[in-house]
Image (cartoon, rainbow, N blue to C red; front, top):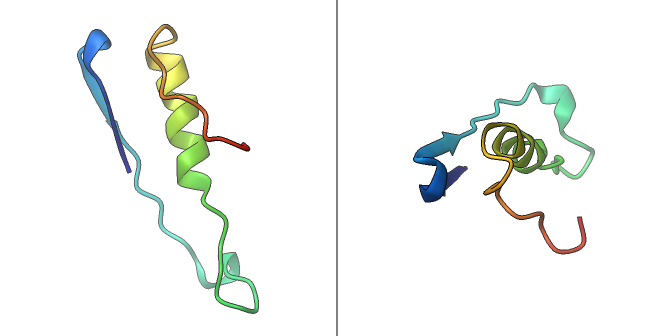
Length: 56
């Protein structure tokens, strides 16, 4: 997942690997990378952080 932040002249990339225990019985997993990307963006570029997802 990428998030370019032009005003801050940075780009943030987050990659997450999952162990087998991260998957539920249906093979689904939570999208922790999205929250992590937004937290890192808010820390590195507080005035231009990636927006929060609707409903998050």
